[in-house]
Length: 184
Picture (cartoon, one colour):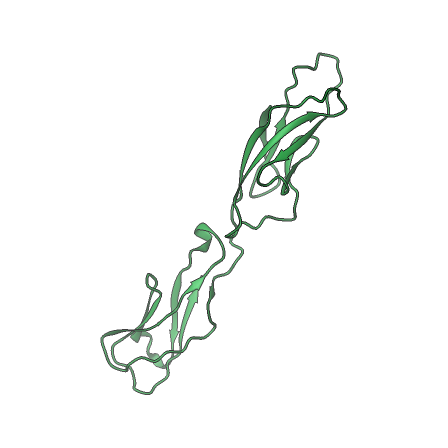
């Protein structure tokens, strides 16, 4: 058995075709028909058609954690309508599923409230952290301080490493500040 990769209409992947080399067939004999037996992780998710093309046998695969992103299939070709049944040795195919950025990052709360002293040099206000259910680089989140009410933008900064909103310098005692942080 060998494999041939063919470019398909998909923007994300190529089609994989399993090709059977059957030394039992002599010139002038009709071509053999094969069925493909799949075992291993993913054998219920993928299938092989009669032309040998591996295809997805479910509407989609969720590659977000904690779902697997690598599947190892063991594929065996069997001749149809032959006695005795003739089968190939199983071959292994490893399929890696690429995650798409299909989940937006989300804060644990829509609003946070905190108190901080009006005076001081640099002081923590509150930890503000978001999560993203994607994997790899699609799960990376960047934080941006967008706005602060009452012209106090320079008095706040967000530390992306510690996920800490900090106050800097003097604030107006008793004043409420609305701080907007954007994530993407």
